[in-house]
Length: 256
Image (cartoon, rainbow, N blue to C red; front, side):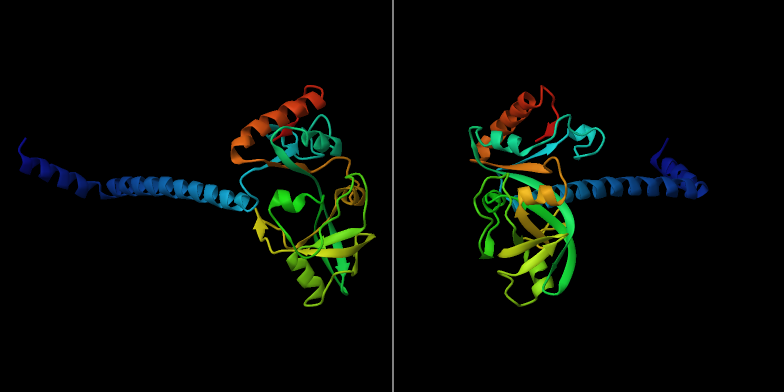
């Protein structure tokens, strides 16, 4: 068949089935666009999460109750066979390559102070939190060094929470109410921003023992670990998993 005849037949076919070929071309364009869009979203999400996590340094590990495939949420069905406790966090401190450890307990409550009230997340932590999270106290002092089982009615305010409750006034020494308990403000954290949708500046921070009592928690929300350097992260993670198996009767019931 000559080239002219082939072009003629092609033109005739296109003319007779314009709708069919048009829809086919449109489907191809939509498919290509969808692949490009999904790839862009995937890369964008990866960079977003990486940027969010990098706020806390590149040697931070987190231990949560439950395996990821079973939910990994404290108190939910399929969670850990044994609770993640302060004693577990203490044991992690002895692993080679671990610099600092913070047991974390989280709840939500209304914080009232300066004649105002605000419902926020309240984090129970320890004096090592600023070091582990690469986050400093901007004004005042940090939660004092003390046994993790001991209570102390002191509170740190996130920068936004301080502004919402006290505006431009100095909050240090002020007594605020968290739920039904009273705490004295001893410091204000430097601005940190959001982490995966959670506004860390619009929150309060207290000793972990106080948070567990305040929210009637029988286990920790997580244990955060600072490794000595990036090269030690994988080794520390494996050691933590092995330690938790040993402490939890051979059960793989945490996620690192």
